[in-house]
Image 1 (cartoon, rainbow over the protein chains, first blue to last red):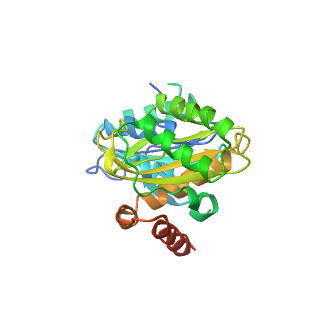
Image 2: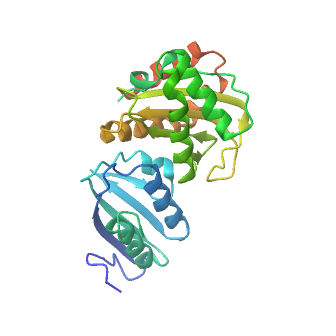
Length: 103
Length: 156
């Protein structure tokens, strides 16, 4: 499995923290179907999952929040996951984006 | 983007009493047809497109809210209406709850950015619990419209 390339362990006692950048390649942007897929996946994990766009961060487990990103094709987003199995979740989220949500 | 830019005031329904999802969508499209925003010859095709979109996954996104939508070549610009169903509609929502507020959106296929911005605007307001509560309490299209104007104004 590919290791998170920019993962940073904040300190030894805090749960592992992972960060990755992704690009929205969908023709119609991050519309409701991909937002649902992100939220469904993230909700299966107990760790935190946050998506950041232009400095604004939203909860990846909430479809309402995801929809407010208004991320059109070409938007760059940053994913943050921290907590139990955060490494696994971030890899799966990155895979969703890289497969244009066909994964 | 402002709600009042694309919601059709004359098509707002504040007392929708239906049992099923397809009935709700049909009622809302007929209301848009009544306001002249969708022609009678195209309305069945729009209804079919929205129902087909629902097959990909319910647009009942939780919190008692649904945002049925589609892109359709027969509209020139964004067309939207709101329906309030006081008794709730079974929309096969993601959280399993009934839906009380429906925001239906039809947009031209060649403007995906606008479609996304409209959905973003709708979602942003609907995640505000006060907005949802006031919306549910509205009993006339005028009251709903006032609320939309107020929300747009606060949005700056």
